[in-house]
Image (cartoon, rainbow, N blue to C red; front, top):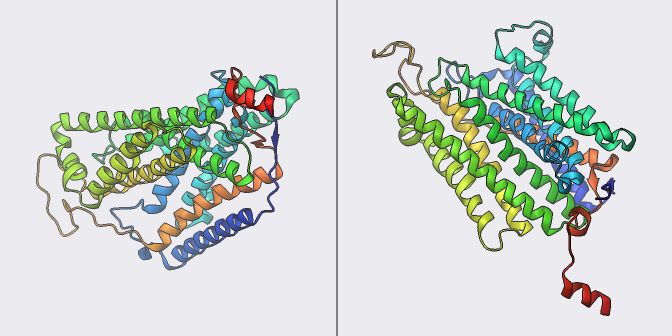
Length: 412
């Protein structure tokens, strides 16, 4: 297969300018929301002493998890030697870094005192999984940056496979660390599970690929570059496999909890009695984010780019719903301080914690997503991240032209 040709986009169309204006407005709204929450205090949000991670954390963790999965396309090319994916590797690495930066920006601005970040960077408690993740996140950005340089510099391209292997292993460790944040929290019954780490790894495959598909298709449609059936069908099959894998792991997670009597309370809360959390789990994640995309992707004609893009969008919506259930639903269920005993006090012990997301929280989360997409939008304009063509004859080494079409072209 010939070396993929990548070029910048022109970036002077009305659609591109409009996109930048929309992303800029969302970023400004997110910054304004962060300043408002810092100035007024977190009482203007829905967060309380019981629910300390709110809607911004839903967006932040989703972006961080998706960042790991967005690199999956590059890993398939460099680590597993699938040449069809080689033209997509630069965009895959770029999106991975952008999503991680967007998620970290939301986390920093949601701290309440972003100026105290220097304390977290200079004083480490290595008994804390959060301290470990600081190294994992920074290391991921550095490793992927080196990988992209080796990949895009032809003289150094021979070393890209080794760098791709390092990036692949690092992203698995990173997502394991993110999942372990919840798996190590023994005080919360919904979190205290070893399966959290592999669950987050599989979720990263699905959510990251969905984000990659949306960015790729929008970029190619907007720049009017050829997008062939081979790539679309590969994306369709990969996304279908990953969505099904996440659904399987989620089922195992809940079945394991249901087997243990001590978890019957939290399982009844999430699956049956949790109100908004139950609705977001069954309708948001299971139906909208899993079953509907699987149906669209596997229907006759499901390889159409429009259907794949719609399915990817539904997976993103379902992923955010799942993160909302895990992060906020897990905190809403009351702590079991004395197992086997009924606890009652004036401090709302044993009571389901109320949470209602506020507009500033939502705007901050959207601002992080917009910031990540803005990084990609600027990068593809100034650097060669986007291939000129993904037509079948340009990406598939085994491509054979349709005999009828070839004959017609010859007669013409």
